[in-house]
Picture 1 (cartoon, helix red, strand yellow):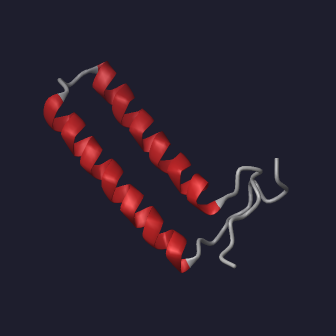
Picture 2 (tube, rainbow, N blue to C red):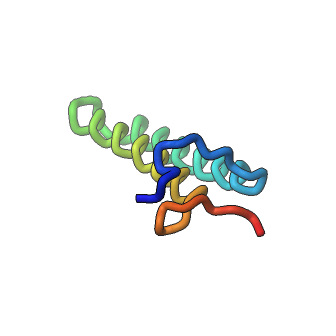
Length: 73
């Protein structure tokens, strides 16, 4: 793991735009799940997993595969 793994990493302006776009995509997906999938433990699990995937997408936007911060050059 990269030494900065547990440190706050301020996203660049471009990364913030990407993060907003991915949040919107996950929000749309969650709305579809709530609308289509019957209420119950499976839907709850699905929504929690979508939330987790959204958070990991943000990590992928701000970090390189080795965990180092992705910086604009």
